[in-house]
Image (tube, rainbow, N blue to C red; front, top):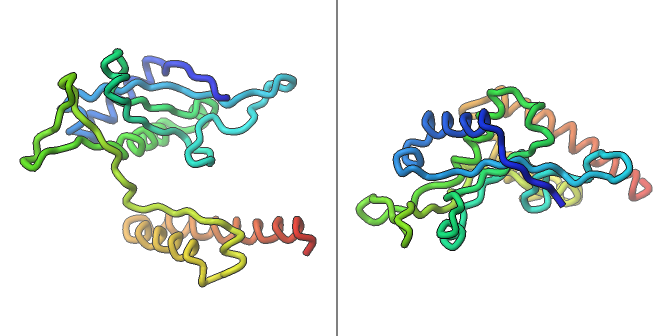
Length: 196
């Protein structure tokens, strides 16, 4: 099980800076953010991490954000909790750290009434909701191997690349190349396991 600690002052200031720079509505409505670091469970003998510090749907992620319940907020909790991978944080450049904070903050938005005003809860705090991704790519290599170009997993992945290619062709091409290499490597590994 992961362990948690409060983020250092410098990190909370970075979060404030990202909010002020890119998230005007969150800033304007004074949404409170509790920032924490998670550490992966450790092997008792080696002290090495066993698994990921932060996961979403069973996959390792650099961090995640949670909208706190009204009950938690009445008890003094912040409006949202930002949990970052404390095992990898120092491996990222400051630009990457800021970009991931921005990513997490972009996944929440204010709930608005028909007139466009922020809806507040019984504590007079802004109500929030999760914002869906603009693009996403997920799938299973085994399905891709079995069905090739007929795999809808592959179509979803390439649709995401097409969306990226519009703004960031170099990034999209690099990801496409890495994906192709990973698929080839995964096919080799799967073949070894299946005795092929």
